Each structure stands twice: as structure tokens, then as C-alpha cells.
Image (cartoon, rainbow, N blue to C red; front, top):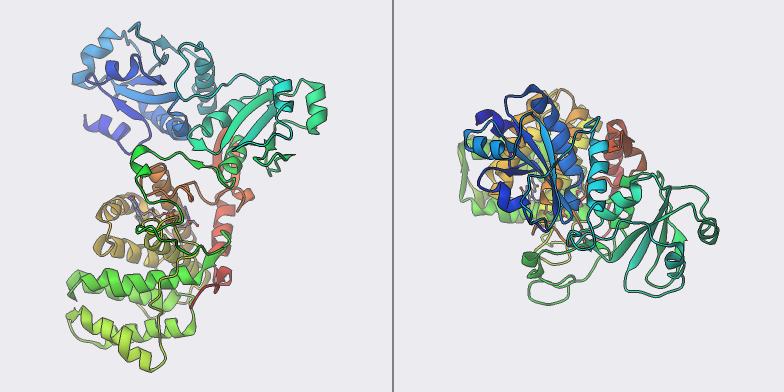
Length: 527
Ligand code: FAD
């Protein structure tokens, strides 16, 4: 059991089934299922598990149509059910149709290869094997639309976008993008074949695959993407104004966009996503120093050390306005000069709010979220600013290697990340977040050898959190959790290898170092 627990865990995007849940889950389900019956002692299964997890993550948004699961036949509890299903070899792949009430044991896949892209295309084929009667609920049509139906969209005003993927008959991109966009509203995605000459001429398309976009206002154009890859097409469509993830029933109870919890309108600030805003960083620091930490009456022991380390790293690396940096430096000098082992937090507040103000050192008490503003006051804001702050600090540590001289942190590539880890674990109000972050830190923080690797580690882990939170209640429908940076921000960061999206990490590093650099921080809206 210990080994199987290691092969797939609840953190993975796969559904873990057992004898208790298998039949009721896959028989007569509203979606189709692709299951891997494995054995935790089988070497192939162990080696294959990263691919299966990657596949499940890659098609997570398809779950209304088809889901990916696993069942461990080496678990004593599952011996009988594996026997009943006739599983003789591991791994065995079985496909179960949606709405199938025949209670048979699924169809086995004996394909030539088990590469991620092959299995993903197989899933599409499986889906298309459904008839009109048993078609999975929520799954849009996957067959090509007729050219005349596409042409009839021209000039029509609608409430949503229609994206048409024009492609060769053997291409899977259209169907994959249709499935990728399934949980999104505000647009319909269709596919049509490039074999119709008249259609190609009318749309002005000369190479495929291409996406042709019909706007709600009746206009229509070819969509311009840097690379003709599934990930680029899907990302661009998800980012269209007005397109967002459908809200779950629980999130429907959230406050309406543009309003705060009291129903009053919050003024919207226009901002650019390619910029970092000083107002977010300062508002975050204000909240951290005056609200989050102020819930602690006194700081002593590990708490005091964590606070001192935090102030050290921020005072030395924060690329802020002079009055704020000076305030942080003065706070640091004061902390270092105090021989006390226990500091009442009121003394810190007094210093920050009153004493330093006399010398013109001042951190605004106004909260102004800009890049971190949410569609309601309950969303985004502080946690967004905290991520932003720590990304800025890792990049500063990489760009200014001498900044931490004589602090005890010199030559330590982990200075910022360890400080963040301790801050999040000790003070961050969201305890669950702290627990998750600590798990990630324990797993791989010690592998980091350079300041550049630290920048990339934080980016990777932030994306891991984004993937986990996609579609959850903390997601702002106006700011869907995506793998970041999206292709519109950094086209060269994205590539495709054997049908799977991969990052070009060298490009990501260069992008992060530019995006979170001092010169990309906008002073707009800073009071
Ligand atoms: P955020 O995720 O806060 O991101 C802020 C900005 O950073 C984005 O707008 C984007 O510009 C940029 N960005 C996005 N991804 C990356 C990346 N990979 N690399 C660099 N920059 C990026 N909430 C939970 O519900 N459960 C948790 O377990 C949880 N853990 C958290 C752990 C930490 C350490 C922190 C700071 C927050 C955690 N949160 C958690 C909160 C959650 O991650 C978000 O911060 C919050 O939901 C607000 O989301 P957001 O849309 O503003 O984007």
C-alpha cells in the first residue's frame, strides 16, 4: 500500500479508484472513462506513471467528456475486483463508454505505443465512437462542421464568439481544442476541413491548421497566433475578453464581478498584464506589516528569526521607492541592534507608523490593488501581491549578486526561498497554503544550486499551485488560473514535443528576469 500510495496520490490529476468505487463510478457514467489497471510492484507501471499523470493533467479540462483513472490491482482490497474484470497483465488499459448500462468490463486497448500523444488521440477516437444517444453530457460535437454552416456565420451578431479550426482531415488539433475549451463559456469552438476550396478562399486561409474567429459583433478574422500548436490556440481562445471558466455551483454564490461584498461598485483600474505594479507590492507590504503580523502580540524564538530574515531580505532586495526602502533598512537596523529575545509587535508598529514618519520614511496605508485587483473584494489582492513580491525578490537576488553581502545570506542561492518558506509557514494567514508550500519545499528545495534555479523553482511551484486551484473557489472568473506566462506574454517560452506542451526554460528564465525586474515595475496608481 505504501508503494501504491507513492505511485498515484490525491494530488495527481487522476481519479484513484478501488473496489468500493469502481463500478459505481464507471458504469452508466455521464462521461466516458479511460482506466489503467496497474500493479504497484510492476516495474513498467512505475516507469509509466509519470506519463499517465502527465496525460491526466493534459486532458483535465476534458473531464465532462472523458476522465482518466487508475486502480491498483496489487492492493489486497482490489484482488477480487481485478479478477472479476479479468485483468491478467499490468498495466491494462480499459475504456468505458458514457451512459453504458450493460455493466460489461470495458474495452481493452492493445495499441502499438503508449505515448502520451497517441493515447490522447485514442481518447478522441473513443469519444467519437459514441452515438447521438449515448454522447457524453456536456461534450460538444467533434465532427467537422459543413462549410456552408461556417459561411452562414458571416456578419451574424451573437452573444458569444465562434472559433472555427480549419484543418486537414488527419489533424487532431481541432478536436483537442474543442475539448480544451469545454469548461469555458463565452465562445463556441467548431472544426471544419480544409478540403473545401471555396471555404478556404472565402476565409482567405492559405495554410492549416488555422483558427478563424467570428466576433459577437459580427466581424470575423483569421486569428493570429505565433505557433500553430494546440496549446497556443487554446490559450488564445481562453484569453479572449468575456471568455471565462464556467463557475461551479458553489462559486455562483460569490459576489458579482465589479462589486465588493457589500454590493458597492469598486473602481476598476486599467492595467497592463505585462507589467508589475509598485502599488501591489507596497499594498502587500502594508498588509503584511500592519495587518497579518499585527495579529501576533509578541515575536520571539523562531518567529522573531523568521521576521528578522524577512526584513533583511526585503530591505536589501526590494526595488522600491527610496522612502520605503529606507523605512525597511531602518527597521532592520533597529531589529539587529536590539539585544532582545522577545519583541512586542506594538513596538514595531509604533516604529513603522509613527517614529519613522517623522523622518519622512513612509509606507502608504492605502490598499491599492492594480495588477492584483479582483472582480470582487474577496478575490486576489494580498496573496497575489505576496507571490509577486517573492518573484521580484528571487529575480533581484539573481540580478544583484552582491546585494545580500554582510547579512549572513551572502552566497546563499536559497536566501529568498527559505525566507519565503519560513514566512509562509509561520505567518501567512492561509494555513492550508502554508502546508502545501512546505510539502513542495521539502520535496525539492535542497536541489537548488544557483540563484537562477531559485527563480525557476518558484515559477514552477507557482504553476503547480495554479494547476491545483484551476476551477476552485479561490479562482477569480475574470483571472482564470493558467499556466503562466501565457503565450501572448512570452511566445518563445512555449514549445511542443511529441504533442505535449513543454516549456523552454531558458526562455522562461529570461522572461522572468525581465518581467520581475526593477525596470518593469510601474509606479502608476502608487499614492
Ligand atoms: P496568483 O496565483 O496570486 O498570481 C499572482 C500573479 O503572479 C498573476 O497574476 C501572474 O501575473 C503571476 N503569476 C502567475 N503564475 C505565475 C508563475 N508560475 N510564475 C510567476 N508569476 C506567476 N490558495 C489556495 O486556495 N490553496 C493553496 O494551497 C494556496 N497556496 C498558496 C501558497 C502561497 C505561497 C501563496 C502566496 C498563495 C497561495 N494560495 C493558495 C493563494 C493563491 O495561490 C492565489 O494567490 C490567489 O488565489 C489569488 O490568485 P490570483 O489570480 O491573483 O493569482
